[in-house]
Length: 111
Image (cartoon, rainbow, N blue to C red; front, top):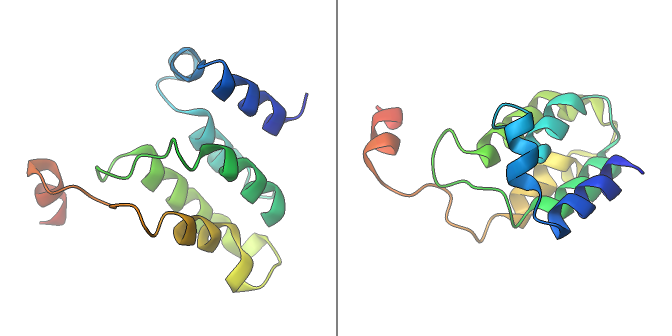
């Protein structure tokens, strides 16, 4: 079973809460983004397609921002044009969503 197949299985069976408890509260997509520094862009995008609806961007410490940070750290290792790397794909996909909700935490982080 490939990592993409496993994550699709976990998503279909609603196992994310159990998996995140095993990995100290980290979601599978966060773990993938952190450990897939050398993975080609098309494979990262394949995995990210499974999780775009699960990524939370409403708080500065949300999983979505962690994933974006990990992708930014590894984008120069993908050997694809800038327009087709994984971080640009993810940001284009999420561009219609609200990124950060105003609240005390977000204002504090902004200061």
